[in-house]
Length: 80
Image (cartoon, rainbow, N blue to C red; front, top):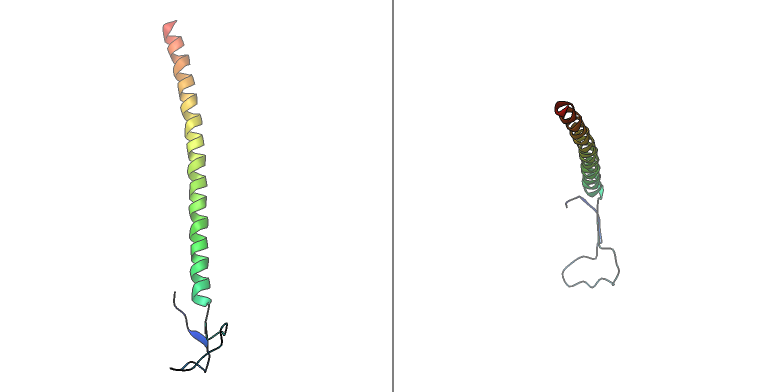
C-alpha cells in the first residue's frame, strides 16, 4: 500500500535514539481506505452473485421436478 507521509518525527537521523513507542511516521490513510472500500464493494458484489446463483439453482430444481411430474403424467396418458 502506498500513501503520502503526513507526519515524520524530526529526530529521525542516523545515530539518533528515539524512545520506544514513539510515532515516528504517519501515512495518509486515504489510499488504504479507498482500496478497502473497493474490496468491500467487490465482496458485496460476489455475495450478491452467489445469492443469485443459489436462487437460480432452486428455481431450476423446481422446474426439473415439475418437468418430471409432467413426464409421468404424459407417460400415464400414453399407457392408457
